[in-house]
Image (cartoon, rainbow, N blue to C red; front, side, top):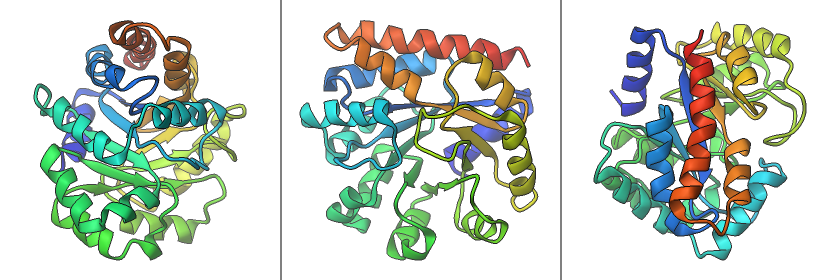
Length: 269
């Protein structure tokens, strides 16, 4: 069983909802990423989603796009991101870490080489936004052989048959995109989220987490009543950008404060 599945089982046994927290590696500076990851866990994050910087992050809104730009300007790469996970694992061997990014850097490294290195450093899951199951091929095999979960996005526009196909190729959990748009955009319609989660939940036994519209403890709590977990990203990346120029520990503290507030909301359920 993967570390992600173990985490969801443990949370369910305790009656808790998963808090998945996203940052971009190298944003706003490489020195801030490791202390921020540790602070996220300390503040109550259950799973870390680590963005791999890319020049064309098409699923992202302006806030996370700027995070990618800052990270690329600092020289952050896929190789550096894998090295960061290795450093994180020196003192944290239990918190699941997911890499979220785009196919091009993984393809350039080579599927076998990437999967081998990812397994070595302790990566637990991969979410490649622009790689549908029909094009996974070798990568799916390489990940499965190393017990690395393959996570897919479901959208409000995903048809039931397509959702069933995605779910059959996924592991770990399914990530429901709550908005018809990019990260951080729009207004969250909780009733619409419930309708889609009910529909998709009937098609799979995988946990369902919701992201793309959760900005604070209030929205996180409303969504957590319906889902197995929530994903927060834009609000954290925005905080990191606003604290650029401060010390890595100050940046980490700013992120930790947001996560602590959302964790308190989830734990009130």
